[in-house]
Length: 181
Image 1: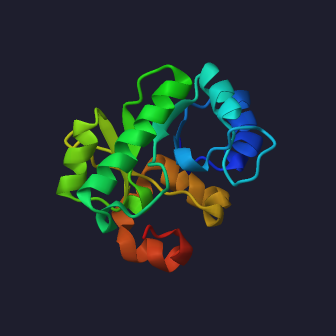
Image 2: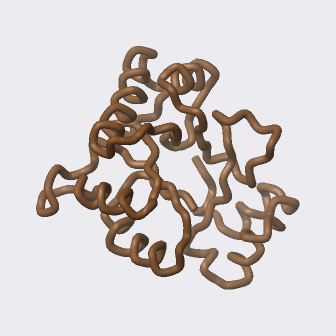
């Protein structure tokens, strides 16, 4: 499972469930949103919480420093966002960070080159579907799960991969707020 942004609820609500059921996960954190102390203001987890989760096997990936739409930035600004988020994670966790998530799923050829040059081996998009062996490792797809999927049947269909054959119009008509932007 993957989670984007690094909000506090990733620690408060998701982490206990991941531990309880032994589910492997990667959390893509916006490093500038992480709080330096547990009691600080903000939407993000604290660095202590990130380290605690990493210590028990939760993987962390970079999701930039400030969560911008990368194509809207200059290449120099985009490169800083990508490299600095990686640097901060590696410094705080003491391990190599090899995975990246494009904020909002916004990416292009130049940004993929920056991600690769920064040393990332894989990057995830917001493109719907299961990754395939033939996919570019810097353009991996994911299956979006939203609150509307909590109906058992919808969630089971997605877990089985059967939703992919129905196409984007079916998904839009079933879950209009679950579409990636």
